[in-house]
Length: 260
Length: 198
Ligand SMILES: [Zn+2]
Ligand SMILES: [Zn+2]
Image (cartoon, rainbow over all chains, first blue to last red):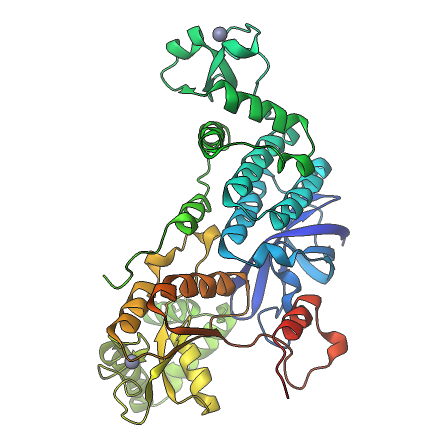
Protein backbone atom coordinates (compact mmCIF):
# COMPACT_ATOMS: atom_id res chain seq x y z
CA UNK A 1 0.00 0.00 0.00
CA UNK A 2 1.45 3.41 -0.92
CA UNK A 3 2.84 5.55 1.84
CA UNK A 4 2.43 9.30 1.70
CA UNK A 5 4.99 11.41 3.49
CA UNK A 6 4.99 15.17 3.27
CA UNK A 7 5.09 18.50 4.98
CA UNK A 8 1.49 19.52 5.48
CA UNK A 9 -0.81 22.17 6.84
CA UNK A 10 -3.81 21.14 8.87
CA UNK A 11 -6.87 22.79 7.40
CA UNK A 12 -9.52 21.06 9.41
CA UNK A 13 -9.91 18.50 12.14
CA UNK A 14 -13.25 16.87 12.89
CA UNK A 15 -14.39 14.26 15.32
CA UNK A 16 -15.22 10.98 13.65
CA UNK A 17 -17.25 8.44 15.57
CA UNK A 18 -16.42 7.83 19.22
CA UNK A 19 -12.73 8.51 19.40
CA UNK A 20 -11.24 9.15 15.96
CA UNK A 21 -10.54 12.34 14.08
CA UNK A 22 -10.93 13.10 10.40
CA UNK A 23 -8.12 15.46 9.46
CA UNK A 24 -7.92 17.49 6.25
CA UNK A 25 -4.29 18.04 5.33
CA UNK A 26 -2.97 20.36 2.67
CA UNK A 27 0.21 18.50 1.85
CA UNK A 28 3.12 20.09 0.06
CA UNK A 29 3.78 17.10 -2.18
CA UNK A 30 0.33 15.76 -3.00
CA UNK A 31 -2.13 18.58 -2.38
CA UNK A 32 -5.20 18.14 -0.22
CA UNK A 33 -5.68 14.78 1.49
CA UNK A 34 -7.97 13.49 4.19
CA UNK A 35 -6.80 10.98 6.75
CA UNK A 36 -8.32 9.24 9.75
CA UNK A 37 -6.39 9.50 13.01
CA UNK A 38 -7.40 6.58 15.21
CA UNK A 39 -8.12 7.35 18.84
CA UNK A 40 -7.09 10.99 18.42
CA UNK A 41 -9.92 12.36 20.58
CA UNK A 42 -8.75 10.50 23.69
CA UNK A 43 -6.79 12.56 26.20
CA UNK A 44 -4.01 10.03 26.16
CA UNK A 45 -3.74 9.90 22.38
CA UNK A 46 -0.19 10.17 21.08
CA UNK A 47 -1.36 12.92 18.75
CA UNK A 48 -2.26 15.33 21.55
CA UNK A 49 -2.69 18.81 20.07
CA UNK A 50 -0.78 17.96 16.90
CA UNK A 51 -3.91 17.66 14.78
CA UNK A 52 -5.30 21.10 15.50
CA UNK A 53 -5.89 23.44 12.56
CA UNK A 54 -3.18 25.91 11.47
CA UNK A 55 -0.33 23.61 12.49
CA UNK A 56 2.51 23.01 10.08
CA UNK A 57 3.37 19.34 10.38
CA UNK A 58 5.20 16.43 8.87
CA UNK A 59 2.74 13.66 8.23
CA UNK A 60 2.91 10.08 7.15
CA UNK A 61 -0.26 8.36 6.01
CA UNK A 62 -1.03 5.29 4.00
CA UNK A 63 -3.89 4.15 1.85
CA UNK A 64 -4.76 2.74 -1.55
CA UNK A 65 -3.74 4.57 -4.71
CA UNK A 66 -6.98 6.49 -5.17
CA UNK A 67 -8.44 6.14 -1.69
CA UNK A 68 -10.45 9.14 -0.55
CA UNK A 69 -9.55 8.47 3.07
CA UNK A 70 -6.05 7.59 4.22
CA UNK A 71 -4.92 6.21 7.55
CA UNK A 72 -2.74 8.58 9.49
CA UNK A 73 0.39 7.00 10.82
CA UNK A 74 2.52 9.86 12.17
CA UNK A 75 2.08 13.57 12.57
CA UNK A 76 4.85 15.71 14.02
CA UNK A 77 4.74 19.45 14.46
CA UNK A 78 7.20 21.36 12.36
CA UNK A 79 5.92 24.77 13.33
CA UNK A 80 3.03 26.36 15.13
CA UNK A 81 1.78 29.91 14.79
CA UNK A 82 0.33 30.41 18.25
CA UNK A 83 -0.51 34.08 17.64
CA UNK A 84 -3.21 32.95 15.20
CA UNK A 85 -5.19 31.72 18.17
CA UNK A 86 -4.44 34.61 20.47
CA UNK A 87 -7.79 36.25 19.82
CA UNK A 88 -11.09 35.47 18.16
CA UNK A 89 -10.69 37.92 15.26
CA UNK A 90 -7.34 36.61 14.12
CA UNK A 91 -8.58 33.05 14.54
CA UNK A 92 -11.64 33.77 12.40
CA UNK A 93 -9.44 35.12 9.60
CA UNK A 94 -7.01 32.22 9.79
CA UNK A 95 -10.01 29.88 9.62
CA UNK A 96 -11.33 31.77 6.61
CA UNK A 97 -8.03 31.12 4.79
CA UNK A 98 -8.23 27.42 5.66
CA UNK A 99 -11.81 27.17 4.44
CA UNK A 100 -10.93 28.95 1.22
CA UNK A 101 -8.15 26.48 0.45
CA UNK A 102 -10.36 23.57 1.45
CA UNK A 103 -13.04 24.72 -0.99
CA UNK A 104 -10.72 25.57 -3.86
CA UNK A 105 -8.34 22.63 -3.72
CA UNK A 106 -9.47 19.33 -5.09
CA UNK A 107 -8.17 16.18 -3.38
CA UNK A 108 -4.69 15.16 -4.50
CA UNK A 109 -4.10 18.17 -6.68
CA UNK A 110 -0.78 19.62 -5.61
CA UNK A 111 -0.35 23.37 -5.37
CA UNK A 112 3.03 24.19 -3.86
CA UNK A 113 2.68 27.88 -4.57
CA UNK A 114 -0.67 27.88 -2.79
CA UNK A 115 0.90 26.00 0.11
CA UNK A 116 3.60 28.63 0.55
CA UNK A 117 1.08 31.41 0.13
CA UNK A 118 -1.11 30.04 2.91
CA UNK A 119 1.82 29.76 5.32
CA UNK A 120 3.08 33.26 4.59
CA UNK A 121 -0.44 34.69 4.91
CA UNK A 122 -0.89 33.08 8.32
CA UNK A 123 2.45 34.48 9.43
CA UNK A 124 1.37 37.95 8.37
CA UNK A 125 -2.03 37.56 10.01
CA UNK A 126 -0.28 36.59 13.23
CA UNK A 127 1.85 39.72 13.07
CA UNK A 128 -0.95 42.11 12.20
CA UNK A 129 -3.02 43.61 14.99
CA UNK A 130 -5.63 45.73 13.22
CA UNK A 131 -8.76 44.03 11.92
CA UNK A 132 -8.90 46.21 8.81
CA UNK A 133 -5.39 45.21 7.80
CA UNK A 134 -6.11 41.59 8.58
CA UNK A 135 -9.14 41.82 6.30
CA UNK A 136 -6.98 43.26 3.53
CA UNK A 137 -4.52 40.39 4.02
CA UNK A 138 -7.37 37.89 3.81
CA UNK A 139 -8.81 39.35 0.61
CA UNK A 140 -5.47 39.71 -1.14
CA UNK A 141 -4.70 36.14 -0.06
CA UNK A 142 -7.91 35.02 -1.74
CA UNK A 143 -7.02 36.86 -4.97
CA UNK A 144 -3.52 35.38 -4.96
CA UNK A 145 -4.83 31.93 -4.18
CA UNK A 146 -7.27 32.15 -7.07
CA UNK A 147 -4.26 32.89 -9.24
CA UNK A 148 -2.40 29.78 -8.01
CA UNK A 149 -5.51 27.77 -8.88
CA UNK A 150 -5.61 29.22 -12.40
CA UNK A 151 -8.55 31.52 -11.65
CA UNK A 152 -6.83 34.90 -11.59
CA UNK A 153 -9.30 37.75 -12.13
CA UNK A 154 -8.42 40.02 -15.05
CA UNK A 155 -7.39 43.43 -13.75
CA UNK A 156 -5.16 44.81 -16.50
CA UNK A 157 -7.75 45.29 -19.19
CA UNK A 158 -11.50 45.20 -19.56
CA UNK A 159 -12.57 41.59 -19.26
CA UNK A 160 -15.58 42.39 -21.44
CA UNK A 161 -14.21 44.10 -24.53
CA UNK A 162 -10.46 43.93 -23.94
CA UNK A 163 -10.01 47.69 -23.77
CA UNK A 164 -6.85 48.67 -21.88
CA UNK A 165 -6.34 51.57 -19.51
CA UNK A 166 -6.40 51.53 -15.73
CA UNK A 167 -8.48 54.65 -15.18
CA UNK A 168 -11.21 53.45 -17.51
CA UNK A 169 -11.90 50.32 -15.52
CA UNK A 170 -14.67 51.22 -13.15
CA UNK A 171 -16.43 47.98 -12.42
CA UNK A 172 -15.94 44.35 -11.65
CA UNK A 173 -17.86 41.55 -13.27
CA UNK A 174 -17.50 38.07 -11.89
CA UNK A 175 -19.31 36.73 -14.94
CA UNK A 176 -16.78 38.35 -17.30
CA UNK A 177 -13.88 37.33 -15.08
CA UNK A 178 -12.56 40.61 -13.73
CA UNK A 179 -12.46 44.37 -14.21
CA UNK A 180 -14.76 45.98 -16.78
CA UNK A 181 -14.80 49.36 -18.53
CA UNK A 182 -17.62 51.83 -18.10
CA UNK A 183 -19.45 50.59 -21.20
CA UNK A 184 -19.25 46.92 -20.26
CA UNK A 185 -20.16 47.77 -16.66
CA UNK A 186 -23.39 49.43 -17.79
CA UNK A 187 -24.23 46.49 -20.02
CA UNK A 188 -23.80 43.92 -17.25
CA UNK A 189 -26.40 44.06 -14.47
CA UNK A 190 -24.38 41.64 -12.32
CA UNK A 191 -21.27 43.85 -12.34
CA UNK A 192 -20.46 45.91 -9.27
CA UNK A 193 -18.80 49.29 -9.12
CA UNK A 194 -15.20 49.34 -7.94
CA UNK A 195 -13.32 52.57 -7.32
CA UNK A 196 -9.98 53.20 -9.04
CA UNK A 197 -8.35 53.04 -5.59
CA UNK A 198 -9.67 49.57 -4.82
CA UNK A 199 -8.74 48.42 -8.33
CA UNK A 200 -5.19 49.63 -7.76
CA UNK A 201 -4.90 47.88 -4.40
CA UNK A 202 -6.07 44.63 -5.92
CA UNK A 203 -3.50 44.91 -8.71
CA UNK A 204 -0.72 45.86 -6.33
CA UNK A 205 -1.66 43.12 -3.89
CA UNK A 206 -1.51 40.51 -6.63
CA UNK A 207 1.92 41.71 -7.69
CA UNK A 208 3.67 41.99 -4.33
CA UNK A 209 4.66 39.24 -1.92
CA UNK A 210 2.34 38.66 1.05
CA UNK A 211 4.99 40.04 3.41
CA UNK A 212 4.49 43.48 1.90
CA UNK A 213 0.72 43.48 1.57
CA UNK A 214 0.30 44.29 5.25
CA UNK A 215 2.10 47.56 4.67
CA UNK A 216 -0.38 48.78 2.06
CA UNK A 217 -2.32 51.66 3.54
CA UNK A 218 -5.79 50.78 2.34
CA UNK A 219 -8.71 52.45 4.06
CA UNK A 220 -11.69 50.56 5.46
CA UNK A 221 -13.95 51.43 2.51
CA UNK A 222 -11.38 50.20 0.00
CA UNK A 223 -11.04 46.92 1.90
CA UNK A 224 -14.82 46.55 1.84
CA UNK A 225 -14.88 47.14 -1.92
CA UNK A 226 -12.22 44.51 -2.46
CA UNK A 227 -14.12 42.15 -0.18
CA UNK A 228 -17.27 42.58 -2.28
CA UNK A 229 -15.45 42.13 -5.59
CA UNK A 230 -13.68 38.99 -4.37
CA UNK A 231 -16.92 37.65 -2.87
CA UNK A 232 -18.84 37.97 -6.16
CA UNK A 233 -15.94 36.30 -7.93
CA UNK A 234 -15.88 33.43 -5.44
CA UNK A 235 -19.64 33.00 -5.73
CA UNK A 236 -19.42 32.75 -9.49
CA UNK A 237 -16.38 30.51 -9.72
CA UNK A 238 -16.22 28.42 -6.56
CA UNK A 239 -19.93 28.08 -5.91
CA UNK A 240 -19.60 27.11 -2.33
CA UNK A 241 -20.75 29.12 0.60
CA UNK A 242 -17.89 30.44 2.70
CA UNK A 243 -19.20 29.64 6.15
CA UNK A 244 -16.44 31.47 7.97
CA UNK A 245 -17.62 34.80 6.52
CA UNK A 246 -20.31 34.93 9.12
CA UNK A 247 -17.61 34.68 11.79
CA UNK A 248 -15.70 37.64 10.46
CA UNK A 249 -18.79 39.76 10.84
CA UNK A 250 -19.69 38.17 14.13
CA UNK A 251 -16.37 39.01 15.67
CA UNK A 252 -16.59 42.57 14.42
CA UNK A 253 -19.96 43.10 16.09
CA UNK A 254 -20.20 44.66 19.52
CA UNK A 255 -21.89 42.24 21.87
CA UNK A 256 -24.29 44.85 23.22
CA UNK A 257 -26.89 43.65 25.66
CA UNK A 258 -26.80 39.87 25.65
CA UNK A 259 -29.35 39.61 28.45
CA UNK A 260 -32.28 40.33 26.16
CA UNK B 1 -29.95 -14.84 4.60
CA UNK B 2 -33.25 -13.10 4.99
CA UNK B 3 -34.81 -13.63 8.44
CA UNK B 4 -38.28 -12.79 9.74
CA UNK B 5 -39.13 -9.14 9.16
CA UNK B 6 -39.37 -8.20 12.85
CA UNK B 7 -35.90 -9.61 13.47
CA UNK B 8 -34.52 -7.72 10.48
CA UNK B 9 -36.13 -4.53 11.76
CA UNK B 10 -34.53 -4.97 15.17
CA UNK B 11 -31.10 -5.65 13.63
CA UNK B 12 -31.45 -2.64 11.40
CA UNK B 13 -32.42 -0.39 14.31
CA UNK B 14 -29.56 -1.63 16.49
CA UNK B 15 -27.13 -1.06 13.68
CA UNK B 16 -28.01 2.62 13.70
CA UNK B 17 -26.49 2.93 17.19
CA UNK B 18 -22.99 4.44 17.36
CA UNK B 19 -20.21 1.88 17.27
CA UNK B 20 -22.51 -1.00 16.31
CA UNK B 21 -21.75 -2.75 13.06
CA UNK B 22 -23.75 -5.33 11.17
CA UNK B 23 -22.27 -8.33 13.02
CA UNK B 24 -22.75 -6.88 16.49
CA UNK B 25 -26.29 -5.82 15.62
CA UNK B 26 -27.12 -9.37 14.57
CA UNK B 27 -25.64 -10.83 17.74
CA UNK B 28 -27.59 -8.38 19.90
CA UNK B 29 -30.81 -9.04 18.01
CA UNK B 30 -30.44 -12.81 18.45
CA UNK B 31 -29.61 -12.34 22.10
CA UNK B 32 -32.79 -10.32 22.62
CA UNK B 33 -34.78 -12.91 20.66
CA UNK B 34 -33.54 -15.74 22.90
CA UNK B 35 -33.89 -13.89 26.21
CA UNK B 36 -37.01 -14.23 28.40
CA UNK B 37 -39.90 -11.94 27.55
CA UNK B 38 -39.59 -10.07 30.84
CA UNK B 39 -35.95 -9.13 30.11
CA UNK B 40 -36.79 -7.96 26.61
CA UNK B 41 -39.70 -5.99 28.05
CA UNK B 42 -37.43 -4.36 30.63
CA UNK B 43 -35.11 -3.20 27.85
CA UNK B 44 -37.89 -1.73 25.78
CA UNK B 45 -39.44 -0.08 28.85
CA UNK B 46 -36.10 1.46 29.77
CA UNK B 47 -35.77 2.89 26.27
CA UNK B 48 -39.28 4.32 26.36
CA UNK B 49 -38.77 5.76 29.85
CA UNK B 50 -35.57 7.53 28.93
CA UNK B 51 -37.32 9.22 26.03
CA UNK B 52 -40.45 10.09 28.00
CA UNK B 53 -38.93 11.21 31.29
CA UNK B 54 -35.58 12.74 30.48
CA UNK B 55 -35.55 16.32 29.29
CA UNK B 56 -33.25 19.32 29.41
CA UNK B 57 -33.05 21.39 32.56
CA UNK B 58 -34.52 24.81 31.79
CA UNK B 59 -31.77 26.50 33.79
CA UNK B 60 -28.53 24.69 32.90
CA UNK B 61 -29.59 22.52 29.90
CA UNK B 62 -28.13 19.36 31.32
CA UNK B 63 -30.30 16.26 31.08
CA UNK B 64 -32.70 15.61 33.91
CA UNK B 65 -35.95 13.96 34.94
CA UNK B 66 -37.09 16.92 37.02
CA UNK B 67 -36.99 20.56 36.09
CA UNK B 68 -34.88 22.31 37.34
CA UNK B 69 -32.39 19.46 37.59
CA UNK B 70 -31.12 17.97 40.85
CA UNK B 71 -27.95 20.06 40.70
CA UNK B 72 -29.73 23.33 40.02
CA UNK B 73 -32.23 22.73 42.83
CA UNK B 74 -29.66 21.51 45.37
CA UNK B 75 -29.36 24.21 48.09
CA UNK B 76 -25.86 22.94 48.89
CA UNK B 77 -24.51 23.85 45.45
CA UNK B 78 -22.84 27.22 45.06
CA UNK B 79 -24.97 29.14 42.53
CA UNK B 80 -22.39 31.89 42.27
CA UNK B 81 -20.01 29.71 40.29
CA UNK B 82 -21.10 28.41 36.87
CA UNK B 83 -19.06 25.84 35.01
CA UNK B 84 -19.70 26.00 31.26
CA UNK B 85 -19.41 22.77 29.25
CA UNK B 86 -20.16 21.75 25.66
CA UNK B 87 -22.29 18.63 26.13
CA UNK B 88 -24.54 17.13 28.83
CA UNK B 89 -22.19 14.18 29.26
CA UNK B 90 -19.41 16.61 30.25
CA UNK B 91 -21.43 17.36 33.39
CA UNK B 92 -21.26 13.68 34.31
CA UNK B 93 -17.50 13.58 33.73
CA UNK B 94 -16.92 16.56 35.99
CA UNK B 95 -19.38 15.35 38.62
CA UNK B 96 -17.49 12.07 38.89
CA UNK B 97 -14.50 14.05 40.13
CA UNK B 98 -16.65 15.30 43.00
CA UNK B 99 -14.59 18.42 43.49
CA UNK B 100 -16.73 21.09 41.92
CA UNK B 101 -19.46 22.50 44.17
CA UNK B 102 -20.95 25.07 41.82
CA UNK B 103 -23.55 24.66 39.08
CA UNK B 104 -23.30 24.01 35.35
CA UNK B 105 -24.32 25.47 32.03
CA UNK B 106 -24.43 23.23 28.96
CA UNK B 107 -23.87 25.04 25.66
CA UNK B 108 -25.06 22.15 23.47
CA UNK B 109 -21.95 22.30 21.31
CA UNK B 110 -19.12 24.65 20.44
CA UNK B 111 -18.62 27.41 17.91
CA UNK B 112 -17.52 25.89 14.64
CA UNK B 113 -17.00 28.26 11.72
CA UNK B 114 -16.41 25.44 9.24
CA UNK B 115 -19.61 23.68 10.22
CA UNK B 116 -21.55 26.91 10.39
CA UNK B 117 -22.28 26.67 14.10
CA UNK B 118 -22.52 30.21 15.46
CA UNK B 119 -23.45 31.59 18.88
CA UNK B 120 -27.16 31.55 17.99
CA UNK B 121 -27.03 27.76 17.76
CA UNK B 122 -25.60 27.52 21.26
CA UNK B 123 -26.96 28.41 24.69
CA UNK B 124 -24.71 31.46 25.01
CA UNK B 125 -27.47 34.08 25.26
CA UNK B 126 -29.02 31.94 27.99
CA UNK B 127 -25.71 31.93 29.86
CA UNK B 128 -25.45 35.72 29.58
CA UNK B 129 -29.01 35.97 30.87
CA UNK B 130 -28.15 33.83 33.90
CA UNK B 131 -25.17 36.01 34.69
CA UNK B 132 -27.13 39.17 34.11
CA UNK B 133 -29.81 37.98 36.50
CA UNK B 134 -27.22 38.43 39.22
CA UNK B 135 -25.48 36.55 42.00
CA UNK B 136 -22.84 35.02 39.73
CA UNK B 137 -19.25 35.58 40.81
CA UNK B 138 -17.32 33.34 38.44
CA UNK B 139 -17.89 31.60 35.14
CA UNK B 140 -15.49 28.71 34.52
CA UNK B 141 -15.28 27.83 30.84
CA UNK B 142 -14.64 24.10 30.51
CA UNK B 143 -15.11 23.70 26.76
CA UNK B 144 -12.90 21.16 25.01
CA UNK B 145 -9.21 21.99 24.59
CA UNK B 146 -9.34 22.22 20.80
CA UNK B 147 -9.67 25.13 18.38
CA UNK B 148 -13.49 25.18 18.51
CA UNK B 149 -13.47 25.01 22.29
CA UNK B 150 -10.93 27.83 22.50
CA UNK B 151 -12.93 30.00 20.10
CA UNK B 152 -16.06 29.36 22.17
CA UNK B 153 -14.23 30.29 25.37
CA UNK B 154 -13.01 33.54 23.85
CA UNK B 155 -16.46 34.37 22.54
CA UNK B 156 -18.01 33.74 25.96
CA UNK B 157 -15.43 35.93 27.61
CA UNK B 158 -16.17 38.68 25.09
CA UNK B 159 -19.91 38.32 25.57
CA UNK B 160 -19.71 38.44 29.35
CA UNK B 161 -17.16 41.25 29.52
CA UNK B 162 -19.76 44.04 29.92
CA UNK B 163 -21.33 42.13 32.81
CA UNK B 164 -18.21 42.33 34.95
CA UNK B 165 -18.07 38.76 36.08
CA UNK B 166 -14.85 36.81 36.53
CA UNK B 167 -14.44 34.49 33.52
CA UNK B 168 -11.85 31.73 33.91
CA UNK B 169 -10.73 28.93 31.62
CA UNK B 170 -9.87 25.44 32.89
CA UNK B 171 -6.16 24.69 32.62
CA UNK B 172 -4.98 22.93 29.50
CA UNK B 173 -1.83 20.92 29.75
CA UNK B 174 -0.28 17.58 30.48
CA UNK B 175 -2.40 14.53 31.24
CA UNK B 176 -1.65 12.90 34.59
CA UNK B 177 0.25 9.66 34.36
CA UNK B 178 1.80 10.73 31.11
CA UNK B 179 5.38 11.58 30.32
CA UNK B 180 6.74 14.96 29.24
CA UNK B 181 8.75 13.28 26.52
CA UNK B 182 5.61 12.21 24.69
CA UNK B 183 3.72 15.46 24.96
CA UNK B 184 3.17 17.41 21.76
CA UNK B 185 4.36 20.99 21.32
CA UNK B 186 0.91 22.52 21.56
CA UNK B 187 0.09 20.80 24.84
CA UNK B 188 3.52 21.70 26.24
CA UNK B 189 3.14 25.32 25.28
CA UNK B 190 -0.31 25.46 26.93
CA UNK B 191 1.08 23.73 30.00
CA UNK B 192 3.86 26.29 30.24
CA UNK B 193 1.67 29.33 29.77
CA UNK B 194 -0.86 27.96 32.25
CA UNK B 195 1.72 27.21 34.95
CA UNK B 196 0.86 27.85 38.60
CA UNK B 197 2.87 29.03 41.58
CA UNK B 198 3.59 26.22 44.05
ZN1 LIG C 1 -15.19 46.88 -21.87
ZN1 LIG D 1 -29.94 22.38 35.85
